[in-house]
Amino acid sequence: MSILFLADLAAEELGIWTQALRASLPDDDILAWTGDAACAPAAKVQAGVTVAIVANPPPGRLARLPGLRLVQSAWAGVDALLADPALPAVPLARLVDPQLAADMAEAVLGHVLALHRQMPAYRAQQARGVWQPLAQPRMAERRVGVLGMGEMGQASAALLAQVGFDVVGWSRRPREPLPGVAMASGADGLDHVLGTAQILVNLLPLTPQTQGLLGAGAFARMPRGAGLVNAGRGGHVVVPDLIAALDAGQIGHAVLDVFTVEPLPASDPLWRRDDVTITPHVAAPTDPRSAARAIAANISRWRAGEALVGLVDRGTGY
Ligand SMILES: NC(=O)c1ccc[n+]([C@@H]2O[C@H](COP(=O)([O-])OP(=O)(O)OC[C@H]3O[C@@H](n4cnc5c(N)ncnc54)[C@H](OP(=O)(O)O)[C@@H]3O)[C@@H](O)[C@H]2O)c1
Image (tube, rainbow, N blue to C red; front, side, top):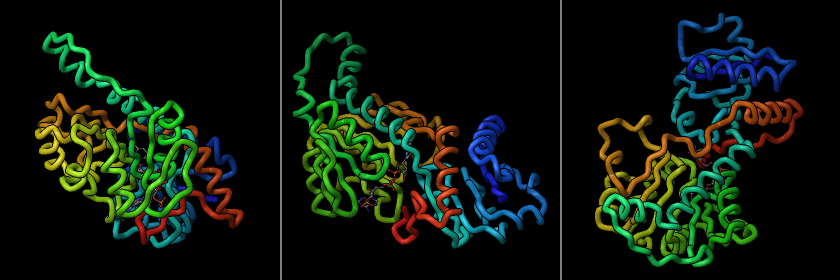
C-alpha cells in the first residue's frame, strides 16, 4: 500500500520519523513529502496514495490526494487539522500512544508537586533572601482538578491519585470513576471542579466548546490563589484574563506549556512574570518510535475493517 508521510518538520526529525514508520510498516511503500511544495511527488504517485500520516501538513495539501481513504495524525491534538477547510471527508484518527499519556502524566505530576510544595513562593523568597516557612498542606488535603478525562487526562489523574492527591476529573459525558479519582461532567460538574480545585490541570482538546474556557469567569470561581497548569492548547486560556487574575492574586501561579502562537514571541510579557512558568510545548512530545508502532497498529486495524483507535468525531471536534 502507498502511504504518504506529509509533514512540515526539520530535515533531521523528518528522517527519524520516516525511518520509524518504515520499520513499523515494512510491507508498505512509505513516501515522505515535507512542507516544501516544490518537492511534491509526481501526480501519478500522489494519485496512488490511500493513507496519509500527517504532522503539521500545510493546509490544502491533503486535498491533492484523490485516492485518499484515511488520515492518521502523528499528534494527539487535531485542532489545527480540522481548521483546514480543504480537509478531505475521509476518516481521521488522532494519535493514541500509551507512551505519550505516560509522558504527560509525568510532566503533570512534576508541575503539580512543584505547586503543591510552593516552589514558586520559595523561589520568590530566595530572590529576596527571606527565610520563612510556609504552612504546608498534605497531598490528601490538596484538591487537584483535571479538565479532560481522555488519554492524557486519565493517565495524569490516575498518577496524581496514586501518589496521594485528592483528584477530580471533568469530561463532557459522565464517566465511571477511576481508582482514587472522582468524576464530574457537564456544566454543574465544571462548577464543582472549579469551585474546589486548588490546582487545576487543563488537558482538554481545543474545540469550539472549549476555546477560551479558562477566562475571567472560570478564574473567579476558583479558590483564591489557585495554581493552573495548562498543557492542553494555548487557545483554552484567555491570556489577558489570566494576567488580570494573576495581578489580583486570584490565580497564584500558572504553568503554561502551550500558547496560541508558538514559539511564544520574545516580546510577550508572560516571559517576564515570576508568577508564570513557561515550558516550550514539551509536556508530552510525540516519540516517533512509539508513535510509529501505534500508527502501524491502527492502520492494520483499518485494513482489517476493525474500528480505528482515536477516530475523530468532526461534530464534537475531537
Ligand atoms: N502539551 C503537550 O505536549 C500535549 C501533548 C499531547 C496532547 N496535548 C493536548 O491534550 C489534548 C487532549 O488529548 P487526549 O489524547 O487526552 O484527548 P482525548 O482522548 O480526545 O480526550 C479528550 C477529553 O476531553 C473531554 N472533553 C472534550 N470536549 C469537552 C467539553 N466540551 N467539555 C468537557 N469535556 C470535554 C472529553 O470528554 P469525553 O470523555 O466525554 O469524550 C475527553 O475526556 C490534545 O487535544 C492536545 O491538545 C498536549
